[in-house]
Amino acid sequence: MNQEIKIFNNTEEIATEFALLMLNLLKNADGKPIHIALSGGSTPKAMFKVLNEKFGTQLYNKQFHFWWGDDRCVPPTHDESNYKWANELWLQSIGYNEKNIHRVKGENNSEEETLRYEKEIQNHLPIENNLPTFDIMLLGLGEDGHTASIFPYQIDFLNSKNICEVATHPYSGQKRITITGQTINNSKNIIFLATGAKKAEKIHEVVTLKKKNLPATGIKANNGDLFWWIDTESASMINT
Ligand code: 6PG
Image (cartoon, rainbow, N blue to C red):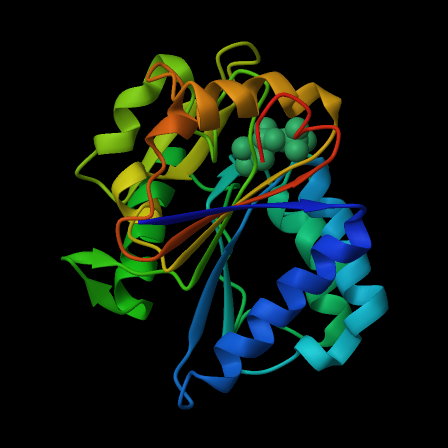
């Protein structure tokens, strides 16, 4: 498993790195679909905006399929929907439609939707190591060390035999659907996107101290590479 830490100066540099990764995967895909799982969170949102403004339709190609590592059990128009922001800030603006956008249908019953989303993943993604394989798995890092919607008190979702689980936010009680650890760890390119001073301590606890009680520590690139895309503020407590 390869792990690489990269420090960026701003969101524009991060967006450029993401765009180059997408275009490189496209070049080497031999016409096959490329499956990208997006994340919610403030940094991804800022990146989507730059991807739209700076790269526009350069990143439009029918081979790209977009998924979510997790999403909230809310309608697609809700401000809490991870799909809503990625779609409005980026995907729909450059021409993608539901043929290439595989959203969690947060408006559905959460238990039923978990099974439906799991089936949709199984029906579309290539299988390696008996698990669906995403080409890119974009992850955020919560201040409690959660990632996707695998929270510390539900850390057993890292090893769930199910591809998706219904998670519940520890404070708000909000239901979410999350892809679980084994599938996340089977991805080709796992990218933690965590910027800002508030993330510095958790990045130190995960990357340096490898604290086992934090779900993010359980993210391992078992079938590819793990990247930490951070900035000088969030990198302030680690040796790079
Ligand atoms: C979500 C995300 C979640 C997020 C982290 C970091 O649905 O909220 O998937 O895992 O990435 O909470 O969010 P910020 O980047 O906004 O701190």
